[in-house]
Amino acid sequence: MAKNKLNTLLHYKDVIALNQKHFIPGISTYSGIFRKYVYPVYKMDYKTFMRIINFVGLEDKIEEELKKKTI
Image 1 (cartoon, rainbow, N blue to C red):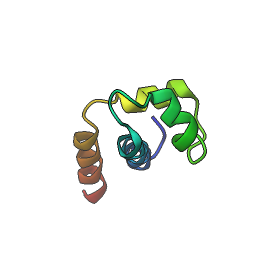
Image 2: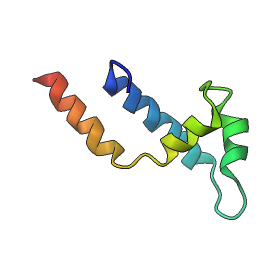
Image 3: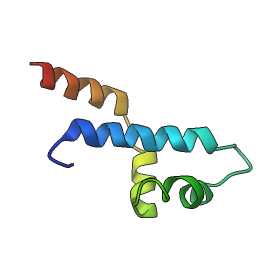
């Protein structure tokens, strides 16, 4: 991850929220959401987008980094 893990994790959270906002099960696809909504805002490739969408334990990692930052 980048030097500032908290900012990276918050970036991931924004990408996941954008995906969840536009995803309709059975109708939309990840690639369609990526092309139409994610890529214009966050310049990344599709492989990175899928890695972010499949990231496990994001909220826990954010809490860990916040605790480190306050100590």
